[in-house]
Image (cartoon, rainbow, N blue to C red; front, side):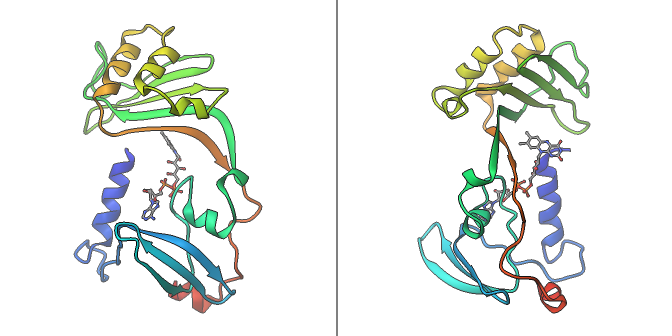
Length: 204
Ligand SMILES: Cc1cc2nc3c(=O)[nH]c(=O)nc-3n(C[C@H](O)[C@H](O)[C@H](O)COP(=O)(O)OP(=O)(O)OC[C@H]3O[C@@H](n4cnc5c(N)ncnc54)[C@H](O)[C@@H]3O)c2cc1C
């Protein structure tokens, strides 16, 4: 299953007519928190409409940070990313392939690996496969400079399998590619600003 399917299911479910039998969930686009202040009972959040720059303040019972590895909510509530993101000196690149690698079946999955790098193709039942490239890198920051396709061709130059070539040749044609460093978030605690009463939990 690809992440987009999870997102599509979520959108389907939260719409007023999404079959949940409940009223729809309000979704605001282009909105990001810029300040979070809690006193243990209520959380004041300053929100910015990033398309206009307009800011407003709102109160909530509970704020949950579900905004990813480089969570803005976490940085506002706990501190800078560097304090919590351990680095694994590794990179990933994931994208959908236009078609299966030559000589493999539509739903075949394959892994070509060597020390320090691997190329994966995940066969899927209802669409073309997705590719995942993983490799070790001493200087993670340097990986984000220069031409990405050239960099990955260099990294995997010693893996001359037709399936690897197929993946690398597809890379410049993709419009939806995830390329990022690998981190683990480590925190002593995952909540701050007091405890929730049962009433607050019900209302949140
Ligand atoms: C290539 C790859 C393969 C993986 N494979 C697996 C696997 O097989 N199994 C597994 O268990 N885990 C896997 N993981 C890890 C898994 O994807 C993550 O652990 C998980 O997605 C983290 O969920 P999250 O909700 O914290 O963040 P995310 O999934 O990153 O979701 C955060 C969302 O918040 C959105 N967002 C950020 N800011 C705002 C804002 N201001 N307003 C609105 N939206 C905002 C982002 O656009 C994003 O959609 C994989 C990760 C990668 C990168």
